[in-house]
Length: 598
Ligand SMILES: O=C(O)c1ccc(O)c(O)c1
Ligand SMILES: [Mg+2]
Image 1 (cartoon, protein in one colour):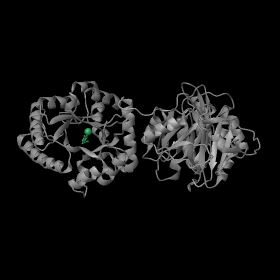
Image 2 (cartoon, helix red, strand yellow):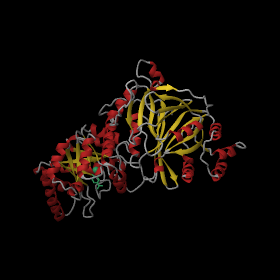
Image 3 (cartoon, protein in one colour):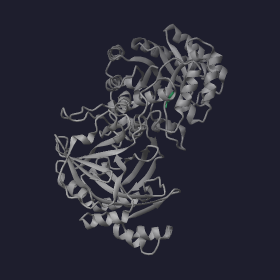
Image 4 (cartoon, protein in one colour):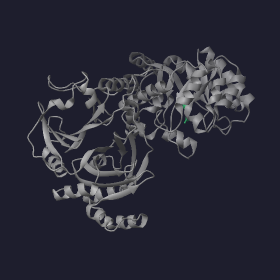
């Protein structure tokens, strides 16, 4: 279907908003009156600009407080409307949105509302314009979609229809099934917005917290199905009032927006995308650094051995069990110390995974490899992390894609006694403050991962939010986070959690090899003793090594942390009995301890 976005959803000047919408692939826009009023462009300029950008102007909005008012007030409203219709003629927009009145002058009088909307539609028709009447969830007398439709039906005018807005409908808990009783041709417009579920005043909720479909808790897809079943043929249009998007760069926000509509159309059965190819494991993570020494020392103390080197690039492969860490000192090395730049995801179909990513607007990365190297399918996540889709060992045995490991040449190494690390348990990647919701939708839709509930964790200097995305068997777990102090380096920390079957032994070996474990305050262990019973001596061991403890309905979790190099630190994690979490309960203590070290 055609896709559209309201200019209020994006930051910047009208010119910037239009450029971003066009570049992200939208077919049209809703022009918000304030954006037009604040623009130095004439309506004719805006029309031409949209035409150049391949955008139609699908809606002009809003007109407010029009209906069910005393006659002299309505006369003034019609005068105002005439001006707007003339303006719309210059813009080349043929549909105007009228939202249900919030005016204290408005009467609770459906027949009056219908008669006045009919008069407005008569005037609009003279200008070749259609009026779409929308119930605001906080409208004074009209605040549900079925009420707005009853008035439109009573007015019975060809230039008058209704505008449905998923936020207003779902936020009030209306049953969207009734939409199917509205004739499709009388649904003049469909606005889509999601929102996180919150118990708050609906106007504040709408004006500050709307988000793109799939990023909140409303069943926008289900609503769209009803609207399509009713016979609606107009565009799917995003109308998002959101404090974060108002500040974030328009370009990436528009891409995030368009991706949400692609995913929604797939879910509603309106469009097909290449099937998701769910990753089956973490093949490697790649650190980039100008100076390999701190990361190498840390890996060595953790019991990793430097087993191979890339045959054409300055990249070392460190391995322990099935955990692999690449250390790259090449031109990609960033100036901000050591950071996690790439993740190798094992995929049963790497090129299929890349096709889906590309269809969902993920930037496909240049493969920047030597001619003899394996061709790797790679895309960039919203935070810039490079995701490599690499063939699983199984798939590589088929004549299919060459295996990434073949690009590395074994180097002689002492068989360092491994410390019990078996594989990568999870990755925790702190996102830029304005990209958290986008990152979650990206990982869900592009990689086919499942998102767990979001958890809030107290940090001494703000609130840290975290949401894990995982595959079905937990062999891929990525905890996406967003932290306080957007300007501070520490706020973009990244960590790699390594699985061990015996965290005490692994932590001891790390410490004995010269590694520094994050110290945890004694108060934490006093509290732990109050909450759980431990065998004699066990808590003392935990305290000595800074091991934190948690349990859920499925099992137990013991974990501890290394010091940080650049943006990166490691966690040692022992899951027993199917524990599903990430120790969020302990995160405030860990964050405080890390601040103290810093
Ligand atoms: O918040 C508002 O005023 C407002 C205006 C126009 C809309 O379409 C809407 O859904 C909300
Ligand atoms: Mg709306």
